[in-house]
Image 1 (cartoon, rainbow, N blue to C red):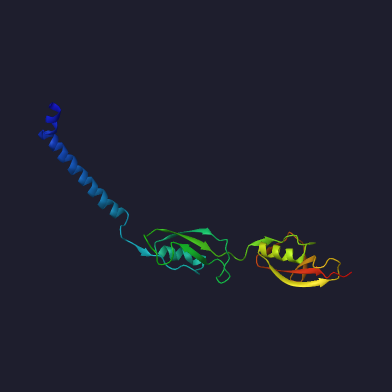
Image 2: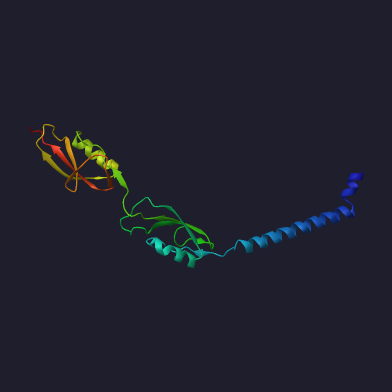
Length: 183
């Protein structure tokens, strides 16, 4: 009975009113404070950076009140200049807040270098499939007198004999010298 009277007393009801007012005022202060601190609804558009040289990027980002970080530079795009931007996140025309970090993918100087596989003494068909799988292209095919018909005798690059294991840029044309099946 005394317990029930406490819930109906004036002091308890005043404490409930104080608690409610304090909760509402704390909520309002946090809500308006966070809007000011986080620049609520204060956006700017990300410029289109594709093709921009990396040397111009720091000044451009400073003007826009943005930051940047290079995250990748492994994929070579021959249509764009070396050390220019291939892509970025967030993408162009996206709305971001000032001082946002933009993640950049940069075009390297050229294709990655690959190791020339050992193609000596394998058939033309196998050699062509290995060349393509590594990322090279099949160049000129010539024949020499040798008993092994369509067997790879030499590997050449730009007319000069090369040994397996050297490094060449991806998409390089590799020439093959094959046997014609005659002695």
